[in-house]
Amino acid sequence: MIGTAVAAASLSLAACESGAPRGSVTSLPPPDPAASAAVQQQDYRIGPLDTLEITVFKVDNLNRTLQVDASGAIDFPLIGSVQASAKTPRQLGDEIAVRLGARYLQSPQVGVLVKSSQSSKFTVEGSVKRPGVYDIIGRMTLIQAVATAEGVDQFANLKTVVIFRTVDRQRRAAVVNLADIRLGKVEDPQIYPADVIVVPVSGSKRALQNVIGATPLFSLLRLGM
Image (tube, rainbow, N blue to C red):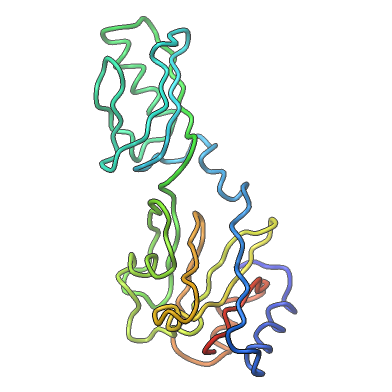
């Protein structure tokens, strides 16, 4: 993982080891808008519950703002159901144009803009049963994210789960105590698109520092550490 402030990580870990106030909580803020701007890019893959703005050039009565349903489809005038999920906005626009052109319009030009994304990606690595990249649908918390990866394995260190996120154009890390979250002692943090969750193997603080590397620790949930 990349980062710029080795000292920040070292000081935060030292504070954790030296008996910092129990229950001290500082929230990791939401990511930069630029880090979530995949919805603006043509290589973004549309997902369930995304909201799409679809325009047909010079045919205003066909313009629509539609939400992709849970199965990944939209219902568009004249042509009916269209599978949108897993397509880029350009691919979806091209498919709508082809279907409109086949029976209703001459050489239509269709544009698709993702107005809001409810289905984006996060990553879970380390001591979970099924590491990988998963979709975020709606609001998701850390507990839900780990459950998506089929939960932790028998070697997981629940006290030092790390969330990586881009904040203020820098890669930041937060160390959270998943065991305490499960017990309701601390808040279950929200997971955002592009977050990376790492569940370390149970071991020493040195193992935690190996996970974080030089990434500055933006926040610590110290309770129980």
